[in-house]
Image 1 (cartoon, rainbow, N blue to C red):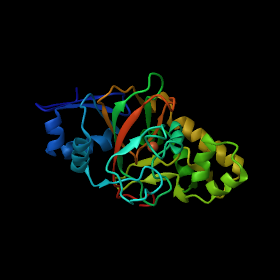
Image 2: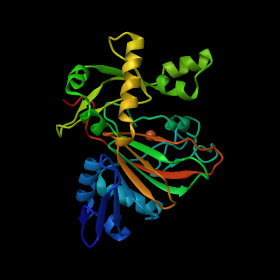
Image 3: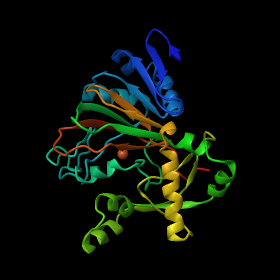
Length: 286
Ligand SMILES: [Fe+2]
């Protein structure tokens, strides 16, 4: 037990990543512990609030205590143009318009890797679970970077990686029609530093399933490096795997982690409700 006061008890889930936070819902929503929770999130990467069973309204209130919430579209902009406070994470197309693209969440990624400023954090609450699969894994890209040999850190320092929608989509759709490939290719893409130098002075790796190639490097050498670094960062000592129970809320620092869902069936009923927090740190902030 690392922090124990009358309202909040914190235990580490693994040495490198994750903390379990036991706190009453009233205290969680009060905002009185928001600074402590945010600091803990930045330090541990993932926070698990077991069995708090937040309603949608409570999740929105909690999110607002930690930072500025961004409302989302579940995929394409709906006809009424109204963004949603609660984004439904489901592979069932009758529940979420994004169901098809959510299959990409089976691959290690960070959210917003093609944006100038990615979201800071996501908060997921488990509403329904799949009988098989559906755990969520997180790896610390801070811890993975820190553990690299110093010579390698120096070699990676100035490299830039193009992150692209087509690279992600080819995981779920490896043999697209040419028309589909043209559509994927015209999707978002952006050059990002391989090593994110945060304002705090910490450094993390910007890798994952959207990483298409390293700029200025032979294509195969570039894939070699990206595969090796993803394999490095997702070793067991950098990973926390969350086995969900209904009512759990899990929050992660998107700027220092990768995440993925372990595969589950589209008709399994699995449903998570998500809120996200706006980021204020561009990848290029050094
Ligand atoms: Fe994601």
